[in-house]
Length: 171
Image 1: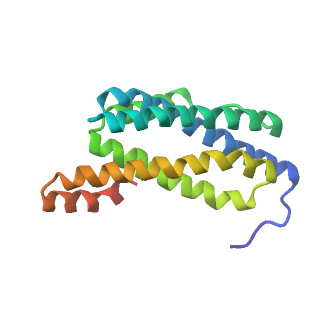
Image 2: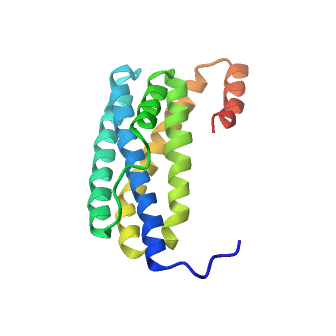
């Protein structure tokens, strides 16, 4: 891939600023979706972890909001109110198994991996602002994958296998 050699500091600031705002919005939406789902989780272990995750996501939003302000970039939303409501409606509509898949595989794992790809190219302040959120996301993904594994183990082998192979269609 050939990089554009004419990227200015202002271009970087605008692009990174929009990514930071989007990342913050996603963490806020994750916080809301997980909070709504706590009472429907099948066991206390899941409810307790999800309550911790809500706190983690809230912390991430605050860290990012503070950095966006210091960074001095446009903090207007990337996602419209309608898009945000669609995100939440999607997660409300899912079975527990599908919630685990979409939240922890499609959003947390893949989103975290995408952010990790950007971090080495980011300025020092942005890298620092992402340190805690990325560390916490490791725990979130581990929880989600562990719960997904438990739920799949409850299914007949053929059904579990079919579900695993359907995950890529959700991405």
